Image (tube, rainbow, N blue to C red; front, side, top):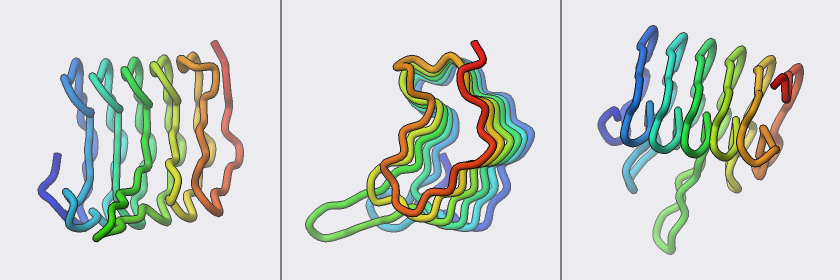
Length: 148
């Protein structure tokens, strides 16, 4: 995990196997979001929670391979309590392969805005739904579901 509120980073070309928690996590703690980051060309196998989870704005997730996450392959999340609201928005999820997740291939949580999900391969994800879209103004195009 990057430090709280970390912005403008490129996480590229890593192989993460058997992580006890999330494979890659970008968030702001309960203080801020992590914005303008890129997560590119990583391989994540057997993460204990989500392959990639983020709370952020203008994040690009592209060319990653995620297999066997206990929860979801990707989770776009928000944080809301009585004093603070952190919203994920304008994320781009493109050209990824997400397979064999215990829950969803991609989970876009309520409160997330303007997520673009294009040309991803989603297969064999646990609950039969490869994509959970509870966000607003989500764009979905060219995703290939259920190849397994």
